Structure formats: structure tokens, C-alpha cells
Length: 431
Ligand SMILES: *[C@@H]1O[C@H](CO)[C@@H](O)[C@H](O)[C@H]1NC(C)=O
Ligand SMILES: *[C@@H]1O[C@H](CO)[C@@H](O)[C@H](O)[C@H]1NC(C)=O
Ligand SMILES: *[C@@H]1O[C@H](CO)[C@@H](O)[C@H](O)[C@H]1NC(C)=O
Ligand SMILES: *[C@@H]1O[C@H](CO)[C@@H](O)[C@H](O)[C@H]1NC(C)=O
Ligand SMILES: *[C@@H]1O[C@H](CO)[C@@H](O)[C@H](O)[C@H]1NC(C)=O
Ligand SMILES: *[C@@H]1O[C@H](CO)[C@@H](O)[C@H](O)[C@H]1NC(C)=O
Ligand SMILES: *[C@@H]1O[C@H](CO)[C@@H](O)[C@H](O)[C@H]1NC(C)=O
Ligand SMILES: *[C@@H]1O[C@H](CO)[C@@H](O)[C@H](O)[C@H]1NC(C)=O
Ligand SMILES: *[C@@H]1O[C@H](CO)[C@@H](O)[C@H](O)[C@H]1NC(C)=O
Image 1 (spheres, helix red, strand yellow):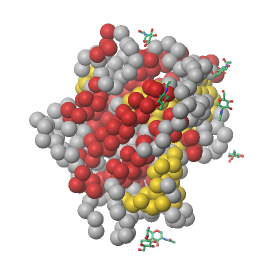
Image 2 (cartoon, rainbow, N blue to C red; image 1 turned 90 degrees about the vertical axis):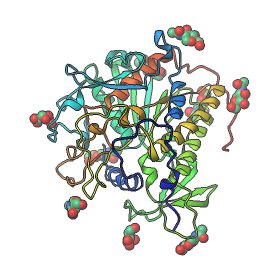
Image 3 (cartoon, rainbow, N blue to C red; image 1 turned 30 degrees about the vertical axis):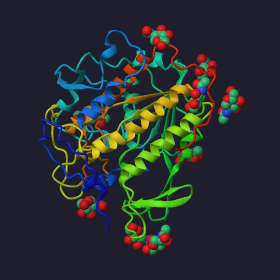
Image 4 (cartoon, rainbow, N blue to C red; image 1 turned 60 degrees about the vertical axis):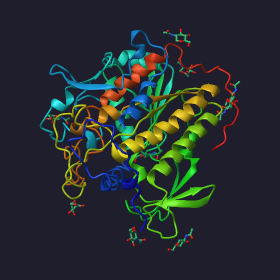
């Protein structure tokens, strides 16, 4: 047996003054939480490093807040805070995230607002958002946590406009919505690993079944659709923890949790890095993409006291304070892996006229163990005994991601997408 890669790769946190009050099992959880993601498969449904990375992030030129990193801050309780929507709003809230519908008794988790250290994060304004995206298209490409944000956005816009579903398929993982008044198109593309995959045995897909992952080939479910899209939000995370055999140039290069003595376990980070490298390189090589692409960073889960199937849960009803919890262990490693790859691509993007931006939500969300459905998000037909500490209740802290998104779009200034701009079409080579 190969040593466990996650355990060995946990970065040191020696520089930290504050130890997290809560320690979770960093090894087992990622594997286990995958089951939750798979169950939604067919359904719609050290810190100084961190700061260095984050500080450079919010791009574009804003006003007084030019030096403010909106992603560094704290959660502040605001008893007066109203949610942007409720479970009665005319918008789709996936039953699995509809915590109010399924009787979550506490409501304080909806009353915390994000306060960046050096400025304010403005409230979301549906009209302002829709004006910013007038005549444009925005695609969420990724996994079910990405869809969580997409649905939150639709609900946050519902006070101003309701979209028409113009999807070309009944497969609810792929959606296309039009907002006629604003000539705005919202698209959801299911691609949880961003690169190509194939089930080794398609008739026997389980959380332990081995999938082939083609690390140097972008998933054509998204590459075939994005030429004319203006804004993209990429996300990917938990799916990388399942068993895989990794391929590059069509050949097996190694695996992860595959239990085959003759294959090297290359670690989940290896694949995560390659997948983002491939994703960004492909994006930058697409001739007709002249838009703006965001990477929404790793979304942490908060299982405590066990795994999803042996008593683990997330019962907290208030956020952690900054001193109590921060990204560490495998979560930090996943975050740094994707962000490092993002940085490389961002520099290339500048040369080629493609803007890459970080929607750097990880730091804020690690403090929100109270934001998950736990047992309050399952449709009647589902196995209620499985808690969900991966996705986010709606309404809830996930709505903050769209406050960030609007703020980022505003920072780009007017005319942030110029369709006529001549692209630098020099092809990048995969390293
Ligand atoms: C932002 O910078 C661009 C050029 O870098 C400039 O054209 C634009 O006017 C600036 N916008 C604001 C709001 O300062
Ligand atoms: C919304 O939530 C409230 C309170 O949790 C509940 O009483 C009501 O039935 C829910 N309505 C819908 C449509 O889910
Ligand atoms: C809607 O936006 C598209 C893309 O910007 C543009 O080509 C089209 O003319 C717009 N339609 C209307 C009715 O404004
Ligand atoms: C979608 O489902 C409806 C009802 O089940 C069916 O009538 C329709 O043909 C389906 N459309 C597509 C594109 O599969
Ligand atoms: C399906 O996969 C499971 C676990 O990976 C295995 O035990 C079982 O034998 C497989 N069944 C078939 C029909 O391949
Ligand atoms: C590894 O061993 C398995 C049997 O355990 C075999 O099926 C497979 O082809 C081998 N793979 C390689 C790359 O040699
Ligand atoms: C890319 O843009 C060029 C020029 O605007 C156009 O001729 C070509 O058809 C576009 N390609 C795709 C795949 O949309
Ligand atoms: C075009 O892009 C390539 C690769 O990113 C870069 O080396 C080159 O300097 C760029 N050319 C211009 C004119 O920006
Ligand atoms: C639901 O989960 C429990 C706990 O893992 C399990 O014992 C039970 O068999 C499951 N029920 C169904 C219907 O899958």
C-alpha cells in the first residue's frame, strides 16, 4: 500500500498563532463527502501564503477601496439583515439546499454579513447586477456547488426579473435561462472535473468505482459551448477525491485510491493542478473567447465527529471567528494548488486579452460551518440519514458569493468586455 498522500502532504502550519479549535479528520472526509456529490450527480439541482495570494486578487481599478481586499474580513451579526429571497420566492431552490422548507429551526445563520477588513461589501442590487450583464452571457461551469451559486444568483435576481428557461435538454445539469428585459443569458454547464472522464464500467457507477481521468484533455461539454460566452465562473473540488486512473497523452500515468499495486498514486493535488492547467490553457487557446473568467475557489466542507455515514454532521448555528478557524490541512493545499495554477494562467491571459479573476471565497467560507444543510435539505424521497455538510443552504452564506461577484464586475468598469478586440491568437503549449 502506498502511504496516504493527503496525510503526507498537509502543509505545516507552524507560523500560525491560532490553532483551530476544531480539528477534523483530514484524511477520510474528502473521500466520504464525495458520496453526497455523487448523489446529486443526476439531480438539479499557511496563512501568510494565503494572504499574499489574496491581496493581489481583486483586479481592475476601483475607487477609494483600491487597496481593499474584499475577500479578507470577518462575519458580522446583523439582526436586521433580511435575506434576498425566501423559500417562497419564485425561483428554483434545490430541495437539497432548501433548509427552511425542510424545517431548519434556527435562523441566525442567515443574518451574518461579510465585512471586509478595509472596506464595506455593498449589498447585492439585482438591478445593478442585471445592468452590468446587460446583453451578455454568463456560464457556471463545474460541479453541484457551482450550481448552488447559480441558483442563489437566480433567486437574488428574482425581485427584479424572472428568467425564461430555454434549455435545449431535459437534463437538469445543463440549463439555459434568458432574462428578456436585460438580454442576459445565464447558463449552467455540468463538468465537475473540468477535464474528460470516462467510467471504466458505466453501468456500475458508485462512489468507489474507478473512473478514468484524462488530465490533459478539457471536457468538451464546456469547450464546445463557450466560444460566445462573455463571463465564466469555473468551480471544481470534491469530485477529485474519488478513485481515478489518471491519463496523459492517452497513456496511464498513475492513479488515486485505485488500489492497483502497479500504478503510482500521484495524489489528488497532482490531478487538481493538471486539471486547472488544462482548463486555463484550453480557455486561453480558444480563439473566440474574449471574455472574463472567474475561478471560484475551493469550497470547504464542515463534517465534524465522523463521516457522513457514521454520525458525522454539522450542527453549529454560528460562524467561527477568524481566530478559531482558517484554511489548513488538505483544504489549504487544494486551495493553494488551484490558485497557483490560476496565477500562471492569469499572466498568460494578460498577454492574450483574456481576463482571469479569482472569486476568492474559501477564506470566508471556512468560517461558516453553520451554513450547510446538514439534515435540513433532503427531499422526502432521499435518505434523510445522510447529512450534507458540503453544499450550502439557500438563503445563506452562499449568497455572499454573488455579492462578491457583483463587486468584482463593478471593479472591471464599463465595457469590460470588448467583443471587437483583436485577440492574440498565439497558441499556448501545455507544459
Ligand atoms: C480603469 O483603468 C482603465 C485603463 O487601465 C481606464 O481606461 C478606466 O477609465 C479606469 N476606470 C476607472 C473607473 O478608473
Ligand atoms: C417555507 O418555510 C417555512 C418556515 O420554515 C415553512 O413553514 C413553509 O412551509 C415553507 N414554504 C415552502 C413553500 O417551502
Ligand atoms: C442581445 O445581446 C446580443 C449579444 O450582445 C446582441 O448580439 C443582440 O443584438 C442583443 N439583442 C437585443 C435585442 O438587444
Ligand atoms: C423533455 O421531457 C418532456 C416530458 O417528459 C418530453 O415531452 C420532451 O420531448 C423532452 N424533451 C427533450 C429535448 O428531451
Ligand atoms: C460494481 O462495483 C462494485 C464496487 O466497485 C463491485 O464490488 C461489484 O462487483 C461491481 N459489479 C459489477 C456488476 O461490475
Ligand atoms: C496493473 O495490474 C492490473 C491487474 O492488477 C492489470 O489489469 C493492469 O493492466 C495493470 N496495469 C498496467 C498499466 O500495467
Ligand atoms: C470565431 O470567430 C470568427 C470571426 O468572428 C468566426 O468566423 C468563427 O466562426 C468563430 N468560431 C466559432 C467556433 O464560433
Ligand atoms: C501573444 O501571446 C504569446 C503567448 O502568451 C506571448 O508570448 C506574446 O508576447 C503575445 N503577443 C503580444 C503582441 O502580446
Ligand atoms: C439510509 O442510510 C442508512 C445509514 O447509512 C442506511 O442504514 C439505510 O439502509 C439507508 N436507507 C436507504 C433506503 O438507502
